Length: 97
Image 1 (cartoon, one colour):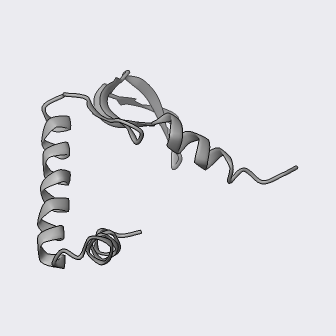
Image 2 (cartoon, rainbow, N blue to C red; image 1 turned 45 degrees about the vertical axis):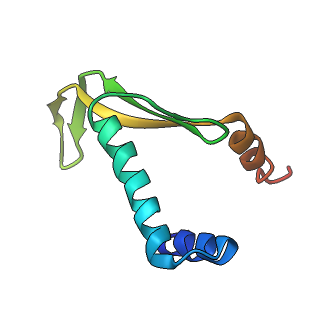
């Protein structure tokens, strides 16, 4: 699903103009990105949590010259932890053995 698909679907269900819905969706995403960029957690009940985690420094390998170690510095990454309802609905997609 793309942002456009989301806007069209919300506009159809609410009767609002697509341009207005796009503005609201874009502002929502902008505010989430802004908060995460400041290192804040963004918790959306029944959806999930966006949080910043610091990955440890580690040693990597260059596949073209595996004898040479490449130091990878620590860095901040965004993690998403799905909420309970989303996690339960996704688990239902697991293929039966």
